Structures are given as C-alpha cells and as structure tokens.
Amino acid sequence: MCLWLAAAWWASLSLLGFVVVPLLFMHLPTPAMAGAMAAHLFSAQTWVSCVCAAVLLLLNLRKRDALGFAHERPKIAWLPLLAGIGLLCAVLAEWVVAPRIVAREDLQLWHRLGSGMYLLQWLCAVAVFQLLVRRQAVARARWHA
Image (cartoon, rainbow, N blue to C red):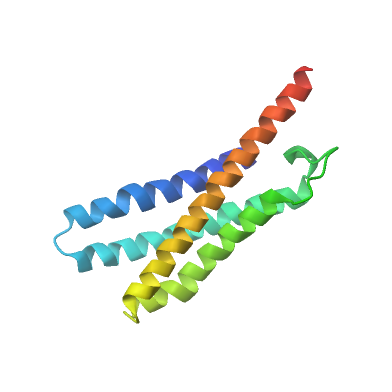
C-alpha cells in the first residue's frame, strides 16, 4: 500500500506540474484564465499531496516492520523525513504562498517560491517512491534467500 501511495503522490505531482498546467497556458485564450485554472488545480493537488504524505507518515509509525525496519534501523529515518518535508511544502504552498500569488503581492517572488516548493515536494515524492522500491526489493531478496 505504501508503494502505491508514493507512486500516486509522485504521479499526480508530475502530471499536474509538468503536463496539465503547461497545456493550460498553451491552449487557454489568456494567461489570466490559465493561471486561475492552474490555481484551482494546484489547490486540489495540495489535498492529494497532504493525504498521501500523511498516510505514509502514519503507516510508517504504525508498521515499521512492514517498511523494512525490522532488524536494521537507519541512522536517519528517511521516509518520515522526506514525507514530512513534502507535506510541509504542500501546506506552506497552499496557505502561505498561494494567497500571496492570488493577491498579486510581489508576484515574481512568490511564484518562484511556490515553484521551488512544488519542485521540492516532487523531489520528496520521487525519493520516497525510490526508497520504498528499494526496501521492497530488499525484502523480496531476503524472503527468497
């Protein structure tokens, strides 16, 4: 289940940020219309990110053995750290950055900050997915050994 959540988180961020929003700006009549639609889509994406990251965090707390922590504990708990950073980026982008972009306050600064947070959130989702894929491969190798 964790792997599916991480894949959904990463895929939804990828599709929206790198496919859908650029298509909006290419095909809608004005940048203002595209920006308004993108704002609604990014807001919906925030909820997807928050749910995926929060559930991954909760599952990590609840089932450490299922995520590969049975015998070896890493010095740094990467999964909760990365999911937590991704969750924090989503929350800050939605409730700190987005209102300033909509209000057109120092638009260039806030848009860059929001884009940076989106990219960091995407990188966290990719890293969580990669981590879970590796852990699943190790668990399978141990099972077959």
